[in-house]
Image 1 (cartoon, helix red, strand yellow):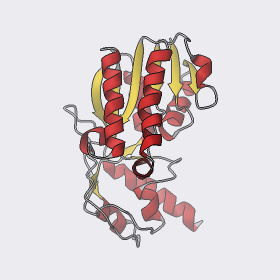
Image 2 (cartoon, rainbow, N blue to C red):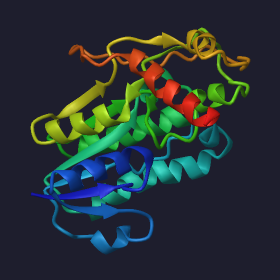
Image 3 (cartoon, rainbow, N blue to C red):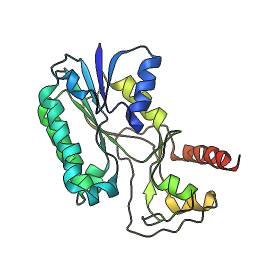
Length: 235
């Protein structure tokens, strides 16, 4: 089986890449510098992790976000050859329909859905992992202002669990799925737990996974991650 991994250097893509290497899959890591090389190359599965994940950047750069999210997805669907396309999207396509980021994610999903009924669209929520460099968790670790209401509920999920789920289910799953933690944590609870001095300014922004299938993984794992990060800062 030949796999094409788009966005192989990104947060999600890199974790999938490490797992594909460990399991000795036949795959091609694809990124900005080599994506044209694989036009017309025959893949069994293409995993698209290439869409931008910066919501505030999208708000400030709507045209660029449209190009990176919608136009590039269209390019890959039209110019790559595959039996199945796995599209890594965001729950923002459901819960942030009125934002630039959410609208563009939703449009990209429609393109993938209309391309082939065997395709799989995976919506992800908030994530954490060793290579995390931005987002509300990093802001709280550094006691920076978080531009979201502190009562916002987030289903934080370990990126390693996500990568494992994708590899295990890439052959048999299709349609649209949201995957991630079975529960959620309020941001203000995390701030107080780690004794951060962050202040919250902004709207309520609930990022909760909704799926008929309840996964066993819990958002509480994020505390172990934060404990490790805090230990790194003090050493």
